[in-house]
Image (tube, rainbow, N blue to C red; front, top):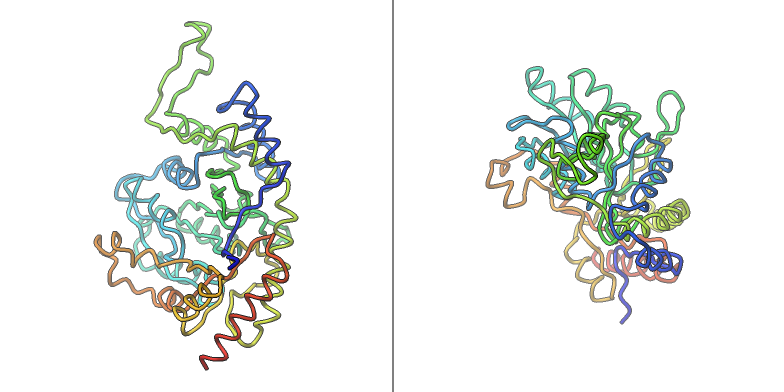
Length: 383
């Protein structure tokens, strides 16, 4: 039986050749491919600076530290995300606060976030980490206005959305992670994401000071800048406590060729998404698309009443759908530290029904039609 997964990387001969070429070059890590990848990625999303890291979780970690998060300070994020979006706050010693999602876009609700912030005294919160869930961009212009009013920073978790964008109130196209409205953006290069490096991530910003802070924290807080004159070529200093969050040249070489294919990949993802919508229109609920927003479609999520039944049935047919995500506040760790009774009804209602169908550029028309047929057959039989 052929297996159709919910996500799949695509590696072609160009990818293989560039990795082999790097393997035979002088540098396997901390070489020229890393800076080349950073430069090309910054150009792609339209930001000034990009910092390659070992994975997106590492990027989230050094981002909250770069923004000065202190122990006990409070940061708001969404419960419908991978745990790393919240965990990075805990890594920095902060406290995680969840606001509910919009029931139609599945994104962190601007209105719920506003109400949460305004329910507390000024200065109670330090930042917001909204997520471009499933590839759909947030209204970052709205979040920026809210953040500025309350002196908060914003980290855009764009791990699902390289190539996504929205048009702002000035009629300007704003690419996910371009830094126009967020202090920092985060991307992931996990194999099921748009750009597959095995593992890897990128941090983007337009702030030069943040950029240099991110570079320092990525590499143990060590610098050799302007030190050889008074010492020797071997000399370095550790200026602060950093981490080994570097990306290798091997992964960066793969990232460069993968990035070059992403525009076409996102176009194909949208074609797949439209075929799902055409098939399910009026029958099955799926993520809404606001006007002037372009979804990068990491996922295609639908809601069904008998989610467990559909999940099991699809697996019997060789369709390996997935669930994105178990609400973070319901995970055992977060329940133990006080989130068990959090009032996040939209998120919990969404989780009770959500299921992600196969979505990746190499999904064939025949495979997709098979998935659609199995989903509709199950729902027709269960009615």
